[in-house]
Length: 301
Image 1 (cartoon, rainbow, N blue to C red):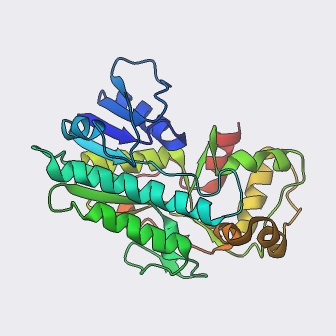
Image 2: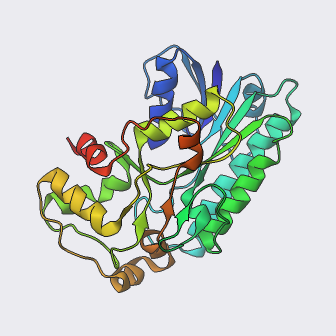
């Protein structure tokens, strides 16, 4: 299988390409800066901007599958959401998806599957309620963005199979959510934030990649929650990370301090999303890292 990837050089994309190569697939990776993190002749780098039409759209049409992971980081590094930043977060996702959808629509032979990124931010903050893929969307900035993002991908559901991967907090050893947490926790000054009772739905990067491979190789149209079957509260997350590092984890950051520092962006850390991967479980996906302690120990070792 020849797979086209937008956003393939990022934290998730690099791992997905490695997994595709292990399965002896070939990859065509679109990047504004075509670095080459992989030493393999099975990876072809293509210079281009996924948010703008270009020759890359013709190259996409010659592939068997498409994965879109493109998008400006939401809170990496943590920063306030200015109007300009929010627009960059929004347009980077919507325009890349629309350009890919346009290429799929006009392809003489459309790729058989389109896997598009999304996020559990789709659900908004919902307290203790368990949320599977049938739960309705929230009403905040990220929820509205996810709805638009998914709608842009669904536009081509009549020409190819479309899977929408709603990922939770992604844990991995070389980036992602833990990148900015590890230093304070290793110094013994880490701890929970906000009330600590809010739910965090997380996933190890290995399992996120596993679910994307599943979506590429098996019919799994529609939304798929890419989260561990065992979400935790922020209090439990902080305790478990401290234990994995052998450090205390008692230095709580109050919610007012987060809002003072990050403004509206703080809501991404304070939202409560107890998301369940119902569809993944129903099709028999076996999580490599179902429990937080094992996932964190593998990441920080």
